[in-house]
Structure formats: structure tokens, C-alpha cells
Length: 458
Image (cartoon, rainbow, N blue to C red):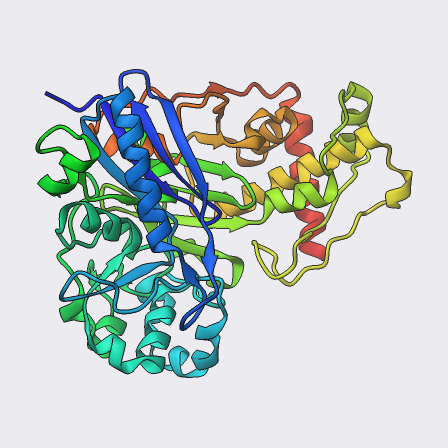
């Protein structure tokens, strides 16, 4: 019988949660949360694996009593791997990817890492490139690294704790790691060059059953006998999965949070520019997904704060469209499609009232998103999810700037836990959004053209 009630281990950078998802309702029906604390002891800053394991076990036991689980799935943040010895214990702590230790061997690593054309991985600081972490750990702790039997992506490590079965998986290998060759669909030259291949477990599809929960552990947790655990998935790809099951490529998804990430299933990798914050991921179906991003959520907070205007009148919209009032990129320097630009207004900022300023900021964020979509080679409908999905001005300008329909997702039937749970039953998730009408299409498109021309001049 297909799984219906699925337990999801969902470990984000700041918080971890265990969610119970009802796949018939496509909704979380119960959840437990805990901070994902970084430990400063031992060799380097690392995640509290023991504390997380206690939280996972307690949550499964508690919530399984209320909602008997049919299956378990795992999703975690990227840029993390567990180095496991032959006894199944950690050979080294799981490094916090924000720790700058790997930068100490930056020049050496840059000399051996693959070209962007092979890995579609931009060079990122600290441990954000998983290959840089492994390189630093091998250099700094050769004895412990030599004891490593398995290098497992973080989602698969938690599956290993539940089942004892080692595995690897493409969404975690393909997210800015330097570990995967997008052309050959095999491990990258870095893996071969550093002698890591024998430590890499078999690569399995995210939705495949990894194994069954250890009988003794399952008994302790009160699970049904032979409860399956699926291989697991990188969190950004978990959020993308419901849309992959509901849309035929090409289409695009704009995920809005601290980062605005534009992904273009069915798009071309040829337009990606590593100097403009572009990269490629691999989706849960094993296909490359071109992506581009900027820190739109953080920019919104800097520009608007916690209290946007309660009402935006037609006069403010008309003023911004007709004058036009333009905010130039980039509010957050060093990232996004214009990383070397310094933001400025084309009019004195003190002349703008709150409504007018909010309109211009919304249009700026939409135009930056449109640039990201173009870099990712996007085509077809664009789906917006997250906080910006409720900003009508953002959605209308994005539709006008791209010349393609925009769907706003304002329901809670997406997200990492919902997407991860779908690994247990890969079927359409009914996540269609509402197509956004553009009230003054010609005027909005005219503004988009003027914004692009102004930005092109610098």
C-alpha cells in the first residue's frame, strides 16, 4: 500500500525539525523543532550530532504514537558531509560550513578544484564548497581522514543512522560541491585526483528505499516492523520537487527568503556565469537545473524593515512607473547578478514617501529576479513561493519584465518537509498557484525596459 503518513527529518542550518506529513492532504499535521546548535569544542566548530540524534529519536517516538508512520524521509541543508569509519562512527566531527578553516588552504584547493564548465560550482567562501571542506580535513587531520570508510552527504548520513546502509545521492552531490561532473554524470576530477572515490558510497535516487529501520531501533521507537527509509534529498531540491511533479519543463521557480533563488528546470547551462552568482543543481529526477540568485530577502529587510506601508495607492504606482523612479543594484554587494555595483537611486531618496519608496523597491526586487531568470535560461511559467508571493507589485513587474505568466503560491502545500515526504510517493502534488494578472502591462513593460537601460549605463 502506498505511504500516506510520512515522518520527515528536516535539518536546516538554524533549526532542525521532525514533521509528520499527510500525503493525501499534502500538509504537515504535526511537528517538533529544536535549534541546530554549533559546538565550539574539539577540533573545529561542528554540528551537535549527538543532540540531533536524541531529538530525532524522541520526536519519532512521540509523534509515531499519535500518527503511526508509514515511512521516513530525510532532507538537510547542503555543504555538509559525514566522514564515517568502518565501525559506523564519525571519523571527524561534521564541520560547520560557516567556519573559515578551509580558507587557510584556499590557494592549494583552487589549484586542484574543477573548472566551472565541469562542476558548475562557483567558488564560495569558508566551507560552502563541500570539496573545499574535504580537502581541508584531509590536509589538517590526515590520520582521522585515513580512517574514513565512507564520505556520506548529510541527508544520507541520517538515513545510515536509521538503517545501517551507506549511500550517496545526486541532489546533495550536485549543489555547489565541486564533487560532480555535469558533463559525464560521474564524480568530478577532484574526487579522482584526491583519491576519494573508494570512500564514496553507491549513488542512489532520492526516492529509492535506502533500507528498513534497524529492527532493534524500530522497536525502541515504537515503529511498525519493516518501516522503510528513503534515500533523502538536499533541502532546496525538496522544495523544488512538488513543482517538478506538477509542471512539465520548461518552467521556473522563484524561491524567496533571505536568498531569492531562481531555478529553471529545462533551462540551458550555457548562459550561467559564475561571476554573476550562477550555478547548477541536480534535481530529484537526476536532471541538471540552472540556477541564479541574489540576497533579495535581506535587501528587502534593509530597505523596508518590518513595517511596510499598510496601503499603496494608485498615485504612488503611477509616479514610479511614469517618472520613472529607479533603484540601481546592488543593495547587497558581492553577490547576485551585479556583484560589483553600488546601489543608488536615480532621484534624491529623501523626496520619496513611504508608498512610493515601497513601489520602487518592489520593482527593483522584481527586476533583479528577472535578471536571475534570464541568466538561468528560464522559459515557461514562473512560480513564486515564499514571502514575495504575496507582493502583488513584485509579481506583476516580474510578469511584465519576463513576458511570461507568473503563478503566486500562497498556500502552505510546498516547502522542504512536504517535498521530502513526496519521496515516499512520487505523484503530482497539486501545487498550482494563481496566475497573476498584470493591470497595466504596457506601462509595466515600459518601466522594465527603462530600468534595464539605466542599469546598463551604470
